[in-house]
Length: 167
Image (cartoon, rainbow, N blue to C red):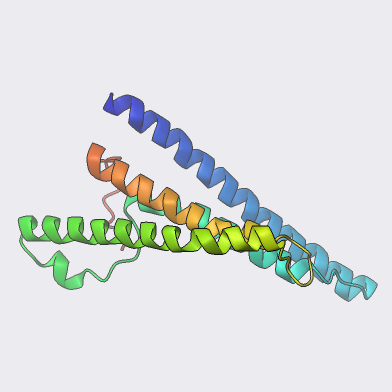
């Protein structure tokens, strides 16, 4: 059963990598096209900066799922790393649980805001993108991160064979 769950999570994490990469590639391409238009044709896309920002938000919040699955998020763990293994493991578990609780709290409080943005049909100033779309990427990304951390804690996650701590 654990192998089935890990296989599904691996596929999901790979999908997140692809989506984050595509969003980053779209952002870089849009920036390149806008620069070429501005400096060679004396014209630019007024909506490009805003669109690139929203693409980067999606890239970051969806890409964070990959980081949380591997447990390689930035940590202030110099002192924790010097602790005996049992204390270190307990503190790492506590940090993961605090993260999950914080992420789910943010998701809970973001939901009414996103619902209001949708119902008011609020749009971005330049690109006219419905604001609920980029705003919903934050709780979606945090939900994915919390889910993957919980699955990693329950299943033991992927073994780290790199020998690097990632911190």
